[in-house]
Length: 242
View 1 (tube, rainbow, N blue to C red):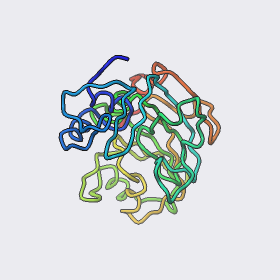
View 2: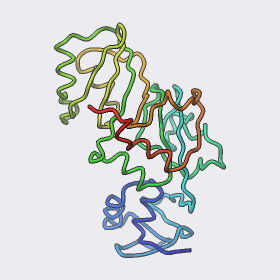
View 3: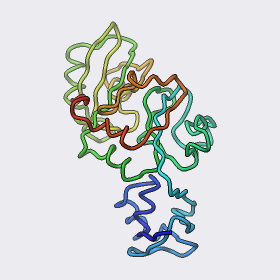
């Protein structure tokens, strides 16, 4: 099997970006076959690679999955407090043990979720430079005012961080379409909570040019696609913008 730099193989698994893998190697947190790795070291997908003492799964095949996530499932493989994970919904032969989620949806949030073990492709979607807009349908416990709308769209200061501008569109009483180009933890919920509104229901409906309504995937089900299919995310003719 062809050798490659350790950081490249780690990034290929989707564990982290190549740059982050290099940081882990520099800090001595990566081992290959029981030996602490150094920058410049090479290995193959058949070697035992551990990050922070935990074996990472390396597959020679790339998997690409689109899942319509139901409520009650978490996006972590190692959450002992929540036994139901999105990986339980995927068959073993479709890459269940190899893939990781591209970003996350919290436990009560439903909708569009991508999983892959193509780490470089995953980073391309996630990286801020790609400016991929995520669209959500949010059902609130009340209607926001014009001042609330302006403040949220401008970019609130939450958790010591200034959020990027976003867009809100009211489609029915207490229901809003939300477009953001970031993916911070519980971002949509926190934006409304900051203005004293509770999100009663939240569903992600779109990632870039990929729209859940065009996919006909039932809740809790998934479809296996190829990389070319997911390139719709970057299709400028189908993308929405903030």
